[in-house]
Image (cartoon, rainbow over all chains, first blue to last red; front, side, top):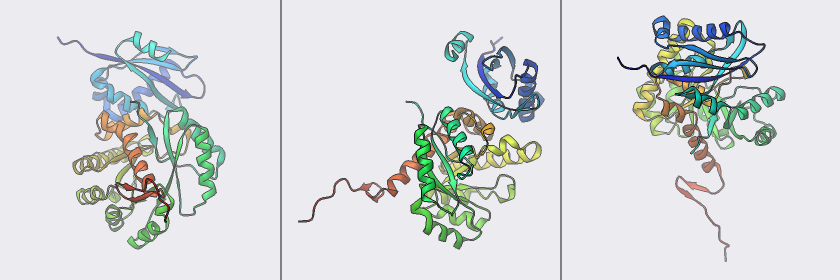
Length: 104
Length: 244
C-alpha cells in the first residue's frame, strides 16, 4: 500500500480573545466543508497537532494531496467561536522538526 | 529571488486617515511591497502625496490608481482623456457590454473589473479576452467576495471566475488578484491570497504571479510611460544635449 504523504502547517490566528482547540478546529472544518463538501473534507486528513495559546499559533497536519484545498479553505475563515478572526499560514513543512525550526 | 508582493486594491477612504494608516501598517507587516488605494475622479494631488509619504515611511511603494464605473463608451473615453496621465493605474469596472468591449480595446486601460454579485454582468468572454490581450489590459479579481459570500452566490461567482480565468489564460491576458478589502480583518497574507486563487483554477506558480509579477509589471510599464524621459515603448531619452 502506498504511504500517505503529509504536510504540517503552522497557523497564526488573529482574533479577539483566546479560542479553544475545539473552536479552532470547528472553524477550520466548517470552512473546508463549506468549500469542498463532506466528501472533500474527508480527503484532507486534517488533524490538530499543537496549539500554542500564548502565541496563538496552531500546528495542523493535512494530507499532501489536499494541501491546496486546506490552504484555500483556511484563507476563507472569518470567524472562530462566533468572534471575528483570520487564519494565516505561517509555514508549510514535511516534518514537524523543520516546521518548528522555521517558525521559531 | 524573493517575490515583491502587491495588493493593488485596498478599498479604504483616503480621507479616513486612521483607517488608512492601519491598513498600510498591516500591509507592510504582511510583507507587501506595492499597494494601491483607488481614487475616484475627485483627484487631490496633496492626498496622493501624503499617502505616498505614509507608505514610504512604512517601507511600501504606493501606486496611484483611479477606478471608474462608466455607463457609456463616451464617459469612458472622456475619463481616460482626462485622467490617464495623472494616475499610474486605471481600472474600469464594466457594467455593460459596450463599455467592456471599449475598455478592452483601449490601450489606456490597465485593469478590467466586473461586478462580483451579478454574474450576468461579467462580460469577460473570448471576444473580450482577445481584445484585452491585444491591448495589454489585465483582468482583476478581488478576493473579498470569496470571503464574505456564502452558498449559491459564492458558487456562482466561483464558477464564473473559473471560466474567465481559463479564457484569460487561453488568450494570454494577465491576471491580477487583489484583496478589495477595506477592513483589516479581511486582509490576508500574499500567499494566502494566492491560495484563494486555487479556488478558481490557478496553479501555484500562476497564482503567485498574479499577486507579484503581473501587478509589478503593469506598474513598471506605466511608470516608464509616465516619466518625462519616455518617447515610445522601448525608446527613452538617456541624455539631453545642449543646443549650440
